[in-house]
Image (cartoon, rainbow, N blue to C red; front, side):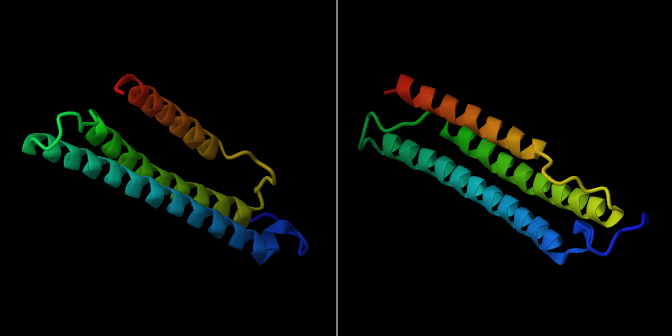
Amino acid sequence: MPDVKPGSPEQDPRIYFAAERTLLAWIRTGLALMGLGFAIARFGLFLRQINLSGLSAHASFPGSTFTGISLIVIGVLVNLIGMIDYTHTVRALKKGEWIAGKISRMGVALAATLAVIGLMMAVRLFLIQ
């Protein structure tokens, strides 16, 4: 283990607490995505049941099951990514190799993926109106 100075960030417990708060934020995001995916998938099922009952001829949202399942899978991946990111951060802190201000590539990739999915959903909703 490299020599770690007593005043270094690696010795400050607040750094570890911040890493843990980040992990919890990843978990909250993953759970929110899974919950939203479940709601979208179930709402699509509800609309299909309305169509089958003959109460409404226009109640449908094609692809809601696929969209819901996709969001659930992304939520699971977010939780796994958060877990991996947390373990890498703690290991880097313990080794003294932690770099302050490093951009989270996983966070940027998640934001880009969700932006693309949101855009696709908006276009789809616009086209089926």
